[in-house]
Amino acid sequence: MALFSIGGLVTTPVFGIVLAIGAGGLLMYQSGIEVNYNERTYRLITAFGPQGFGTWEPLPPINCVSVFKTQLVSSTYGRSNASVTTREEVIQVNLATEQNQRIRLFETDNIEEAFAFAKKVSEKLDLKVWDATTREGHWVERPNTA
Image: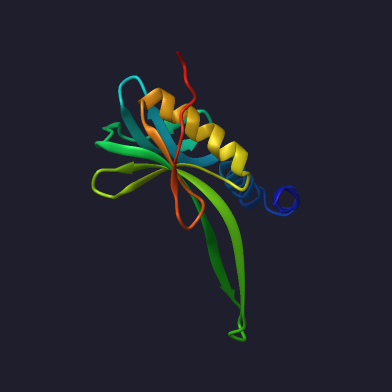
């Protein structure tokens, strides 16, 4: 896209500037979640560069931190109606609410990284960790801190 912007500056400066600004905006755009553990609040954010936008809301009553293995499936269709389906296995770290809702905090393909993050969240919110990466599921034991 940067090459098109440079080429556009040579032929039509206004079009090139618009493309360059659009490319820069795409690079600076992020979305996600932010949690304030001390205040027990969270917000879904949209960030442009260092500035994040979103409304803080109180965390609902939380049962546990869950670590969940799932597959993300996406399909792309071409002009001839042919499709390509991709599957990606990911591990998600969620806050599980008392109303059986999930607040997704983190997503990775590394199971050790997911459990390390879940452990930090569980310590900050004083919650148990539910390992849902297997069909049976089980509680993760906390190490003795005494």
